[in-house]
Length: 196
Image (cartoon, rainbow, N blue to C red; front, side, top):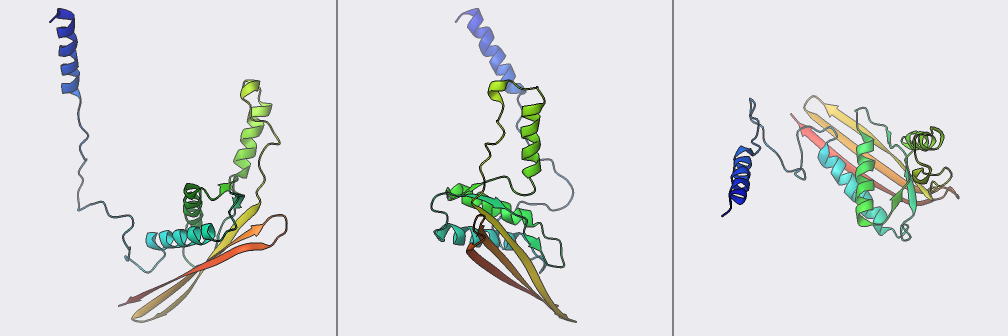
């Protein structure tokens, strides 16, 4: 074996020996990973199981409705939170969008909250002079949405000294932008009860 090959093998062995494998950083307390699909019943407030259940139900219903046969472009509007608790409704619509995109049944335009970022980026590319002309995205080429997706979540809370019942109702509709007609609508209801 030549000295050069031997030197390379020695260097490789030394580098391998220096490599470390990642080990967990342990802190105080009992912490463990849980199943993200497991039913979460810590409180009767809106939780991860509710979010997953709503998103799966709505995405499946919309995909099976037949309205999305031509993979239309949809713009998602914020879901109105009519409950008395904080619910990140964008996470619900993001999950619905993700499931529909993965199934290949729909395409999504910038939603109403991200539209300004899209416009700002186009202006920056076209007006700043910072970019090569051949790489600049041209103004006037954004694809308009055929439909808008909008909805609301509301709740009814009943309680007594030893009992609390929370009823959630999530409603979603797909509206044709040109005609204003609702082409699809569905709702999901969830009831959670706590006894002391």
